Image (cartoon, rainbow, N blue to C red; front, side, top):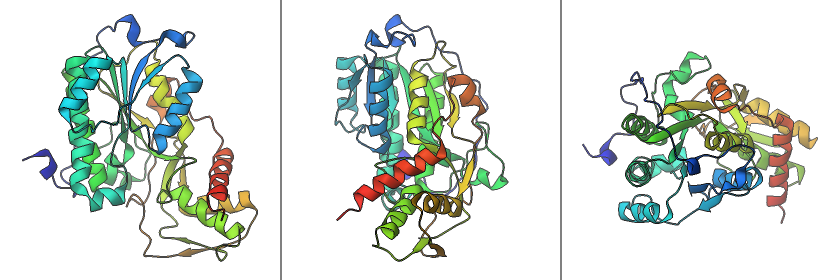
Length: 342
């Protein structure tokens, strides 16, 4: 069966049990001490034009001003182009964000989701294993891969069963497992399983911008004082994208490398319902509105609630979310106040 022929519907759940081998020692150029970021770390960033990528580039400038950012509009499904780029540029690390990351788009264009999310990731990782064997490979995965395991109602850690329930999650789960396997063969892979990330510049099909756009329109008199939601009690473990980007950058700056293939949940450990997020946004705006349930509005993830356990990432990356929820709300609401101006 070809990779792209793997069905998008939920298949047998799985749990990884094979141990990961430790990293091999890296040459000096592949790491940098936190006090000396000017050493010129060469970072290949894929997906840099996306929502998370734009924030990540800004955080890299702040935290590693001496880095060399390598970006190329190459199609990661083009093995020849990827190999040529890696051979020529000799990156010290890869931050791999590029993906078909919308649940709705992955459902509508499942072939693209599989070829980009799985095939492209495999090509990139195999190229690093062959042509940049000492480089670190940081794969930004997703908590969506846990899927049906969230039905337990408990915060999930990295040992939770992988049981995706949509095409996006299935293709990312396959890529996540593939990186785990390649890491056992020598790839210096690290998998960061991100939960819901929110921030400025995000599309309205994401949950917090979807709500913030409505609040901004109500505030501006462009919409009746009613917020339409599909699943008011659906819960999301929300992290400000700037905090998530700091986790990714911390993974580049570890004083001691983690075992190959390590998987870490990037999350806050706090679940917020759609209803509570709408109420919080209304409080920030200082306006009143009713919340109306519209059954035709789909739940973004298709899952009733998502909550993660961030303990492993806190210890391994010396990381925890720092941006207060109120600050996140203000930044996203202000973003939409600006975007809806006539």
